[in-house]
Length: 171
Ligand SMILES: Cc1cc2nc3c(=O)[nH]c(=O)nc-3n(C[C@H](O)[C@H](O)[C@H](O)COP(=O)(O)O)c2cc1C
Image (tube, rainbow, N blue to C red; front, side, top):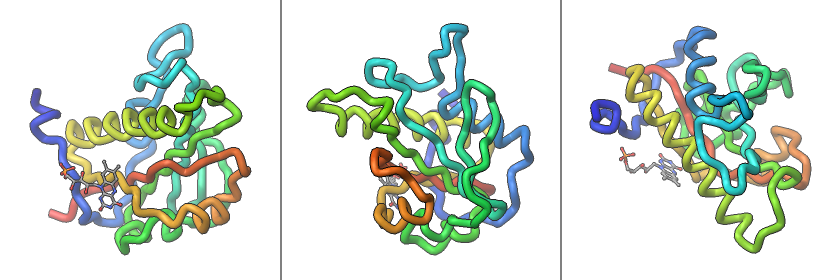
């Protein structure tokens, strides 16, 4: 009840980085493996588990490997600025990008709808984690998806659904 009461969007961040354990907890809450059969903290349509969480930081771009519970390096460039249209994305410590891997999704007529819904569940997990930890967050749909896909060097069968900035609130 308390985290639901505290869940909110915040757009004013300080640049301080999250300690590694906090980042690890955040990603596990977002879409970690929570059962021995490999299922996750968020539901996914037909258990496709098609949403990859990319993590853009000053140190580069990483992708969350839920099975290994680690971050896999993707790029050494800082692509935070490209993750959105609002100025805070460049300086907040963490911009998560939810990317649907269509190679993992089925070919239902509703695939587009399902990938969007699946990313929404992950985003809400992040909102609730942030509410429980006193972190600031905002989910974002306002993205230049063509430019960001290029900056992230995504494959043609990967679709950017949403981004979400996380950090400490400016008090
Ligand atoms: C699908 C979706 C896209 C959103 N896109 C943006 C965005 O691009 N930029 C932004 O600042 N907020 C964005 N928001 C956050 C909403 O503006 C925010 O949730 C709304 O104003 C309600 O505020 P609350 O989350 O504090 O309840 C988005 C929210 C959703 C669900």
